[in-house]
Image (cartoon, rainbow, N blue to C red; front, side):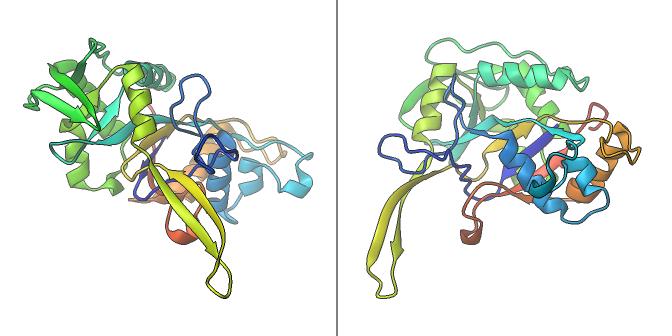
Length: 284
């Protein structure tokens, strides 16, 4: 399981205009939640791998030789785990929903991790960790009655220990365990629409006159995604098995304390940087 913790604004572009936003972020078609396409994520990982040994066996050959063989690494789409949402207290709370947690539990089960099941919130309520002390919770313009849950606290500790990158920083990792709200699926979909940043950008010519104006959507720092990563036997005939493929990928791409990965657009204006962590069922 690969976790991506945004340390800068993210623009995983959708490539098409929707409404007033010229460059929106990618969203899953059935639930409208932010997502990163598997091809985009795999391309970013391939870029970071550079010329490491066995890179073509792991990721596949370059675009001129794609018919030779497929890569041995299987990278899924990066799904939303939690979105930071502005709050009247504690600056922001991470928000998720039963739909997101259900998918996370299913994907973690594939690597042998049993995440505690958390009760779904009633309408107008938000599930928060036990001991958070929240009575009412204001997220953007939505007002929730907080309901404490021991199960959510246990699940968050498991996620923090197994999935979250240490590069996120001790303060924010501690905050994750406390300032986290599980809201209804429809509420999260709404918050993921209103909680993104939409910026006006302009292109200037040599005389500093505007050539083009566009509106661009970005996801805020502290957004958390996860992706399933699997290894298969190398297909280029060099004999690498699944274990060796994953070992080389981990050591060459993500096996450093606070490892960083740039994903999405706008790299030259500082966007897209994420702390990453690769975890398996035995990692805690």
